[in-house]
Length: 280
Image (cartoon, rainbow, N blue to C red):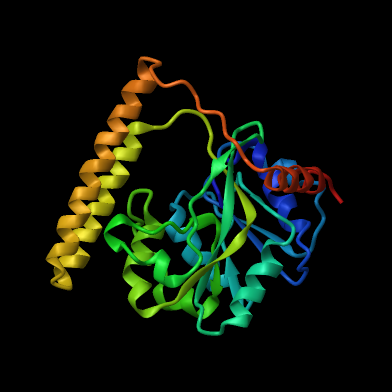
């Protein structure tokens, strides 16, 4: 869990790991030069499985993840962001998926999205088979980065590119590895992905452009010109949609949609929240 100015959500994120039903884990919290005091919120969590690493430097997410990959001692390597929440069964279910199918290298978890105040705002799209996840590489991959768990040797083979591409380290890694790897995902929701505040549209558009440049180099290298054309069409459509949404927000033309989730999903989230919010 690389962190940078994690704020008040860090404690809940860490407690969601402490409350995992699978107990044989280690949590590496790597501080990337934070200037806030978020780590103080963990001062009463005396769990020997948690290691906090600090060097005062700001190296970026990709570099910190590669450090964690080097330091990890387990058979599997799991991702976690500083403000998200893992359901108690997340590790157990993902490990079972990896062990049931030894050909799998990396698995994600289906996830809800939550607001700053822990309200459900939606569901992330999450295809569960490798064929569906990688069906349209020109569109990118619906494979939420903070939910990943995979074989440690897979992460050590591919690693993250340094310097990390602007907010698309995960997509670059998937694009580089999907032809020689096998991915999967859990069908049940096992994760809450936090979406905070308004969209940073400048960052969104820049991220899309950076990923298109990465796709261009990759597809040109493979001589898949038709994939490159499709990727450009996707980029154009997404940017047009982004600008429509941006102006909708600016002029308040689009009222905030109310998220409808079934009773089971909502109940599981509130059950998870009530459990992981307490220590011990």
